[in-house]
Length: 469
Image 1 (cartoon, rainbow, N blue to C red):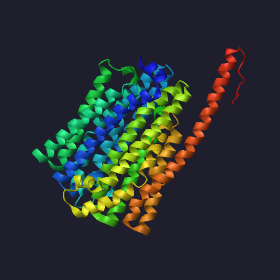
Image 2: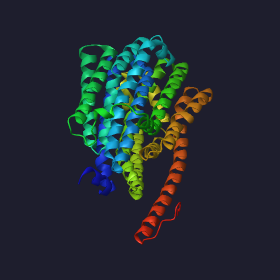
Image 3: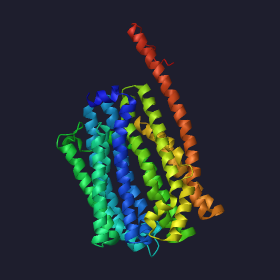
Image 4: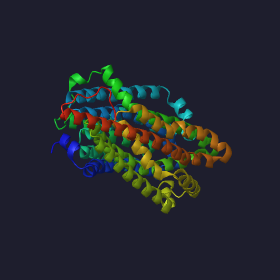
């Protein structure tokens, strides 16, 4: 069974498992190496270094946003074009996207290097944290193109139906990063610069791996030189779909900026270190759900393009159930082992441990609903409905979260910061439920219209223009 037949005919449960498991494993490994790197930073350098990575986090989010703008948008289009049996158009999308995955992070890197210290101070760096943050982020930005290529183009591999290869990319980068972080921090004693060098070298290795897949004839979708020249209609389509995850990450950057400033005001450098630990644990909790959703994305996109609506709905339902189960497992873990999780990072700092445990329990109070919210947001990306996906993504991290972040601390102090997250999660999940209800209702109407037209064509009758059931 070739990849197209597999997408169209294989049972959804088996297909979702085969696509999602490698993606989940890859993203878990990828997130785990980020967590381990932060553990190395905390234990090998100290809490100020953890605070520095927290200050640098918005910058890294913006780099990720650019990769997702192009990578996710192109991935959805590639899946749709392959579902429509338009391989040449899928290759044109891939070529245009590769060019932008190189140009955009390079432009961002130049701008950041010109204004490093003002940007870091704006993102919450105190005088004590600034030297660590500067050393870390300048090196990260110098290697930004490597991360963009490895992350963005790895999605193309998944879109053409090869999730195992995409998983190997993530595992390779993770193993290299963990090994180099240990060597550079604990053996060479390079401090936070060592962690940054380990990160960009791991991204370089991953980028080489991904490019070798496309340029050695192993890929279904080929990167052809004539497709590397950007054309506006293709780029506009990519960015229209990719805007949702881009907007989510850009909003996350603004969110993190305001969060850092608020935490510095109410809790100082220790609060920054605490949220850095919470975000690391958050990565472990969210990445499996995101991996599941990304595994479902090409299945949904292909079958939507092929007008196999029952398979689209079945894939979404199974992904939501599995995502909720994963989120619930994470929720239980942070309640069973909260101190043990935090002490991995805090290096015997009892005050930091106490603050972080308290923050984490509140921050993740409504974690189980995010399995539904994240999976459903990515559903809209998969079917090419970037506007709906953008609204749902922005609702949780921008439209709801930031106003709450500006208001609640006035009433509850630093606890108001922690309580912002669960309230935002609950409200955004409710909004997502409304969007999904409307979408499924429209899909059933379209399915009924399609069945009616197909039945009349078989009987030799002319379809009624504009008819709908």
